[in-house]
Image (cartoon, rainbow, N blue to C red; front, side, top):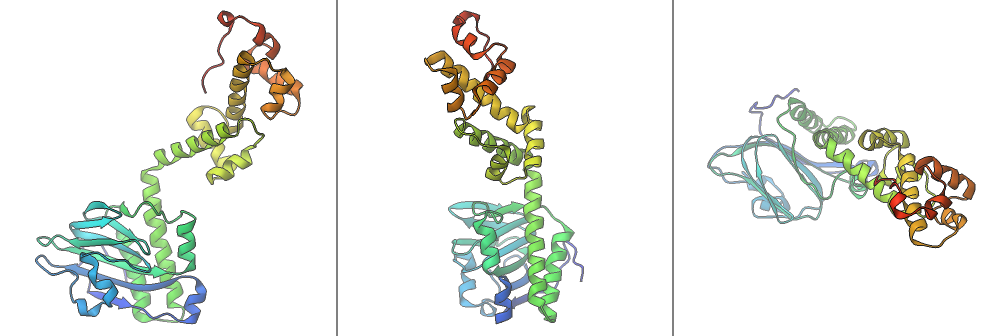
Length: 307
């Protein structure tokens, strides 16, 4: 059943039992529903239809599960982790287990909400790995028929309860999560990629006296080596390993200028097993051999530059 944003939709509400088979999936849908809250209406409506733990949403509650709430009409307020958000059409609230929250529509406007609750080891693993963000629980996805349609598909599976309906409902929940998180990632993509580049730079600086390679750097930022290289080059004009060498040569300049260390010692400290290779690389980057750099007067030196 296709749903469009703004369609009234029927009031729908389910709290679901789970079987041993559902538990083995590692993910279960616990509740789902849709309400159109009229202006000047108590919230939540028909409290008797909700288990006691869910009724105090307007005053503040802590749940043992995840929930997603999508608002398509009206406005209201959402509070979580001592932060307050003005809820407007197209906003999604992502509620995490054991985190106190409260939300309600404005009394004068009401709102139209879709929600789904879910739990299980698989979703908890996504949270532990940071795929479901722990620090972000309010999203502005805008109004999208596709999101409402995914809620509708979940409702249909729950309503009909055909074989493996829990599996299909959870597939819909994963689709919802991926749509919401991907939309947020696309919106923040420049900032996201910039943060990846800065994390890679920081990792290289911390390991300037080591001998790491691009595989270790890409593992540290959670991205494939080839993708990291493309992004890093777009932001810095250098490949990842070129930048790492740049850092090492800059550090070598400082050591040679400030310390009475042998070329071999400097090379080994900076992770170069072959001092001759280090000297060739240094001359290629700086224009003079390391020994000559140390002997040049300060006024004659040409700084290599800050990467």
